[in-house]
Image 1 (tube, helix red, strand yellow):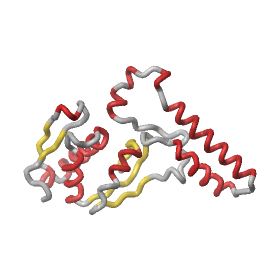
Image 2: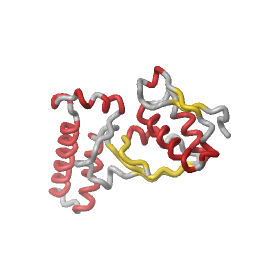
Image 3: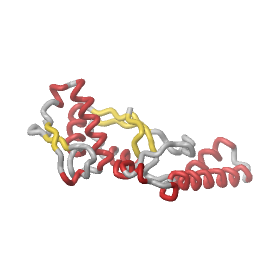
Image 4: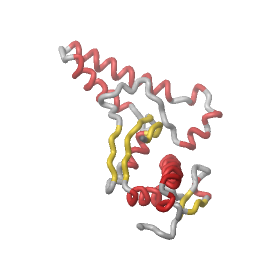
Length: 174
């Protein structure tokens, strides 16, 4: 179970399809008006410096809620059943949801797919949020099956902007 990550991260994660199965929470069936947000790690690092004028969360929630309730009222006035109206209103409102909306998913990967993911995403070229996920997955896998993940070496790189660490192995595509 991967939880508290952004939908932007999951859009990157679904690109790793071979040897992987994914089941993600749907914005169509879940009312996201009170959902949390998973801001990029560099935005999170600036959280202490944020004042009320720079906090986007209340604005995004307000836009989503207005679209949802206005669409729901319109459809109900047209005689659309409550269940169908809710689905359609959520569908209309989710266009206002950003990539930073927090989500959760079950991500299942075989060992080869997990190694491939780590090799691609725990590098200086990867986005900071997905690099942190690759770091956490490697740490967990190394504890459970060190014989498959003990060959990686940690490294830092200036391009990582202080977000996570890189991993290297001499045994790529093993």
